[in-house]
Image (cartoon, rainbow, N blue to C red):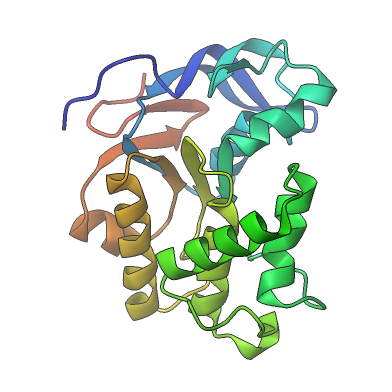
Amino acid sequence: MPFSGEPIVQITNASIFQEDKTVLNDVNLSVEKGEFVYLIGRTGSGKSSLLKTLYCDIPLHMGNIKVAGFDIDKIKRKEIPLLRRKLGIVFQDFQLLQDRSVAENIYFVMKATGWKDKSKMKSRLSNVLMRVGLGAVATKMPHQLSGGEQQRVVIARALVNEPSILIADEPTGNLDPEVSDGIFKTFEEINKSGTAVLMATHDFKIIENYPKRTLRCEKGSVFDSAATPA
């Protein structure tokens, strides 16, 4: 599938750190608008640290990263919430508020990102839940849902602000294969609507069944999996 225009993610000569340890050196890569890219590698290879750097959970000390129009190496603390409104972030461990309903979990993100009109919030809630196939769970608590349903709520929450890119860190890591397949198809549908997806995964069955461009973290570097690390 051809892509054109400015990349949604552009990384140039970046070093990625985890605390005071360099985990990736001289990273150069891009993700085009509307592209779907896998990020693979062993545990500890730097996948999660790279993703966290993209949404400023880990600071960038060396190199240049541009994400959704923001220069991560120059970004000010007050601008980070503005960046994250353009991103959808999906975690392996869901990170849902267990004492709040599905609707309240999603409203929490809306309020934190500037939503105020209650009628628009209600409409958007219905829209994102329908989009992930969960139109009837708004009043349920997270513990009343299966793992797959909870992950769909996380995806719905990530879609609230119509992000330019979804960043997903092992989104099927805690799910069985059949459920994982359904979750992945949800990501594909989101991608087909124009949202880029950058997904870290160990799920090689998914990669085999749904081949996409694949980046590998290995030996302190990131490279296209078709290439050979230096």
